[in-house]
Every structure is written in structure tokens, then in C-alpha cells.
Length: 303
Ligand code: HEM
Ligand SMILES: CC(C)=CCC/C(C)=C/CC/C(C)=C/COP(=O)(O)OP(=O)(O)O
Image (cartoon, rainbow, N blue to C red; front, side, top):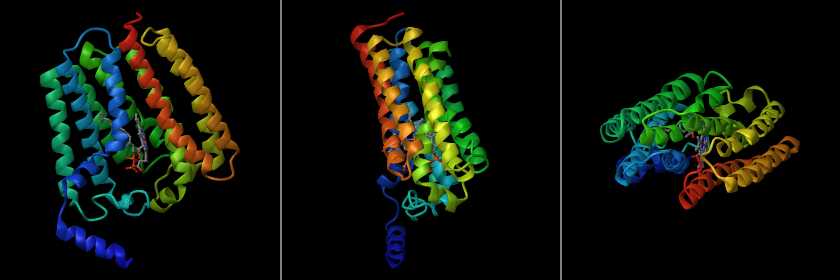
């Protein structure tokens, strides 16, 4: 406790560093979000100037990070009682709440306006929708109210490939909706794996995550159901012509491994399988999109 008090005093007098503002952008989580946005650009039919592609990726990165900063501003009360989040810049006193809010709002507006002016307004509108969904629908409305919070609110994290796709095509098309669906169905097993071994945090903070409300067994059964539904959905990009045969094989292997993790979690009596499944969920999504992009870049289009 003394250590923590000293740390708070030190930090307050020291003021915020650039690193604190970078931390507000949740860079590690957002790196995969941006990667899926890049995939939308690579997989979309048509051409975009490489410089504009770079601008689009930067706008997705800045918009995603900015919404993370607003999330940290709104959630500063619960972040202060969860072990995983207590050292974040606001609860530890290094950044004032109003500074974080101003930072997040400014960068959100900037990312949308630059996307609209430099790339197109279809991508900018989807980016604005995504930021709004994460901030208003997930963070401010559902997160503290229902155990379905991440099922519905998770849609925010699934939009980036559609944003990237729209940056190239100016439209919303069926293959990009499929990429949305893939991430949408991946989110519950991704997040509930973490919630299972961070259950104490969410109980203390009064956040009604699924394991807190429905119990561990029911959560685990739902995780298995999502991994099973993911199998055909993850294969679908091959059948609509935006992914190749190597992708199809990899999606089946990774999908079965994901189901295997869910089965081990279902049977487990300790936290270890859930921790492993959380780590695997990230690798799963990263590899799926990496293979989809690599095959497209190496071999060209299929459609
Ligand atoms: C509503 C949907 C989601 C929720 C509630 C959620 C929740 C979380 C949480 C609580 C963590 C731990 C973060 C930390 O301790 O800093 C995490 C980690 C992570 N999430 Fe998610 N996530 C969601 C969607 C996504 C999406 C869509 C992606 C990417 C496409 C993603 C990628 C990651 C990555 C890469 C990490 C690991 C970060 C690290 O290395 O520490 N998440 N997620
Ligand atoms: C382009 C754009 C705007 C993308 C946004 C992407 C997005 C909504 C990702 C959601 C992932 C995420 C950080 C969830 C954390 O949940 P939480 O906020 O409950 O987690 P916490 O407890 O770590 O704060």
C-alpha cells in the first residue's frame, strides 16, 4: 500500500509521459485490429494507391486507439478495482481523466475526417460507426448491463476489415460482411477465455461478464458452440473467392485446434486451459488473416 501511495505521488508530480498516452491507445490489442483492417484492403477487388492504403491503415489505427482512450476514460472507476487494469495511466494518476477524454475525442475526429478527405466517405462512415459502437454501444451501454455485452458490443471489433475493404471499393460487399462475421463469432470465445481466469476482477468491479452471471459451465458450453459455428464461417472466404486453397486447409486445422481448446476448457477444473485458449485465440485470428493476405499477395486474385 505504501509502495502504491509513493508511486501515485511520484507519478502525479512527474506528469504524464508520451508513453502514457501511447498506453491509452491500447496498442497491443489494436495491433491485431489494424492487421484485420489491412487484410480488408489487401483482399478487396480493385486498386488503391499504396500511399492511400497507408493513410487508410493509419486512420484505422488512430481511430481504434482513440476509442480505446475514450473507453479508458469512461471505465476509470472499474479499471481502478481490477488487478489487470489498475496500473493504467488514469487509475494510477499519471493522466488526468479530462486529458484522456480530450485526447481520445480529438484523435477520433481526426481519424474520421482524414479518412473521408483522403480516402473516401464510405470508409470514413464505417470508421465513425465503429468508434461509436465501441464507445457508446459497448462501453457506455452494454458492458455494465448484460452478459451479452461482448457478443453484441463485439461487433465493433469486427468492423475493421469492412473499413479496409470500403477504403478500396467505396462499398460494403458480401465478402467483407463475411470477414466481419468471422471476427464477430471469434470474439466470445476470445474474450470469455480471458474472463474465466479474470473472473475475480469482473466480480469485484460488478461487471456482468458471462462467467460472473451464468457461471463457468454455461460459459464454457457457449464457447464451444461458437468455435463449432466458426468452422464453416472461417472456411467461407475460400468459397466466396477471397481466399485460396492453402487458406482453406489452414482454417480447418486452426479451427479444429480452437475446438480442441474449447473442449479442454469445458473439461478443466483449473485456469490453465482457459489461459492457453486465450493465447491461442489471438494466434488463430492473426494466422487466418496472415495466410489469407499472403496467398492473395503471392498468387493474385481468385475471383
Ligand atoms: C468486444 C470485443 C473484445 C473484448 C471485450 C476483448 C477483450 C480483451 C481483453 C480484456 C484483453 C486483455 C487486454 C489487456 O489486458 O490489455 C484482450 C487482449 C487482446 N485482444 Fe481482445 N477483446 C475484444 C476483441 C478483440 C478484437 C476484435 C481483436 C482483434 C481483432 C482483439 C485482439 C486482442 C489482442 C491482440 C489481445 C492481446 C493483447 C496483449 O498482448 O496483451 N480483441 N482482449
Ligand atoms: C477501428 C476501431 C474504432 C476499432 C475498435 C476495435 C475494437 C472495438 C476493439 C475492441 C477490443 C477491445 C479493446 C476490447 C476491450 O474490452 P474492454 O474495453 O472491456 O477491455 P478493458 O477491460 O481492457 O478496458
